[in-house]
Length: 174
Length: 257
Image (cartoon, rainbow over all chains, first blue to last red):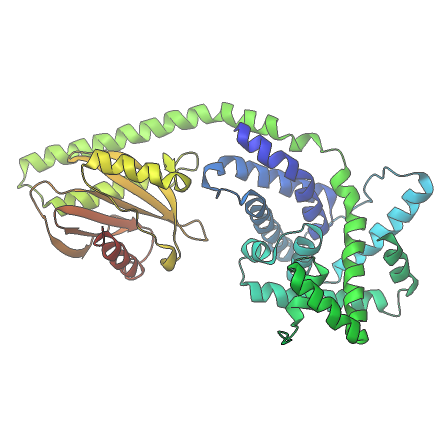
């Protein structure tokens, strides 16, 4: 179990980020991560050597999908997430807040399967093969979903509702 | 120079920094000559950066108390004692069951060795397959050690079949006691976590060679056979017709020892 602590604990922040970006609601996302960790503890002997990260994301992703399904059938209310606590100064925090809300809103326009691929690949740095494992689909499907997600998000960013200026702002961040 | 054509996948891999350096250079050169595509790809790279920057603060937040992993592990270990006792009780019941079955067999005409083997495999499946803590004693990563151990105890070379072609990966194995001596249990699982158990041991006198026979106990289906004095039984919770090609594969590989 010490090995588990060593290998899993450093990944918890990334699991929280993925869950939050996927379901948007802070408490709900942390519940998912907690369930995920409980399962990881009880199934630790079933993991495959060297694949802990993809394994954890798989457990988490499946839990999130179950939750989406429940929400759809029960029509439960999802409370929207508040902005994460910022470690920057007040003005920067304000910018960060706006950007965060905007990104979350744009992400929310993507279908779940596209959002998941984009987050796993572009934010969590999973390889295409790992993402395919997490989503239980062939790599080809990962690539086509990724392509559709990026196209669609680009339309959202460049759409008439949003000033083009954002793109420039984000480019300057690099 | 004859370039491989640039694919849409290459363009995404370029954005995600997933290309080998040579290919990356080829894609970069291509983009230089195709400004429209370059603009689209720059947009994707911006998106990626935007997502990473916007979501970074979530990962920087202090972890809430509910996600304290060492505390969760500790709570789990404390809770596990009763589970272990329960497992021990189940094992005793099973042994009792096997004992009773053996007692019965001494009163009745001796059952074929294959029938016993099928029962032993099914018992092993019911005890170990649902186990989430320690279904196997030596994991797949220790296959060499596992093979040596079971081969020594069974006094004959045991080959651990590779069932990747059938969609099952080796989880590991252990030695299990049977009333006919030690048997080697190997466990496999597929992508859905569904498990198969393969039990093998030397056949004493009965059934030194026997064709494949399907034998099911409750929901557990099994196929059992013997080759040159060694018995094999493959069991799982899958229809017999899906088990048969896997059994054929095990048999084929076992014959190449």
